[in-house]
Length: 79
Image (cartoon, rainbow, N blue to C red; front, side):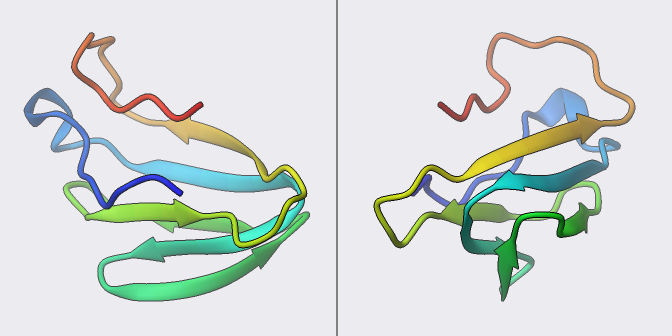
């Protein structure tokens, strides 16, 4: 599980697209939790608080696309 976060101040115009590659879990976006499984895709609008929960022992793999992204050392990193 990663804590709720927003991306850095430099990416307030950044949209993120999450595509579930493997596993299942929960992605929270703007206070609403979404059950996700392989093949699901979610959109996270700019400056939206979001988080991921993996509630089982199987890996949860997510491919993340970011728009208007300028690399920033302070941007979120999910491992």
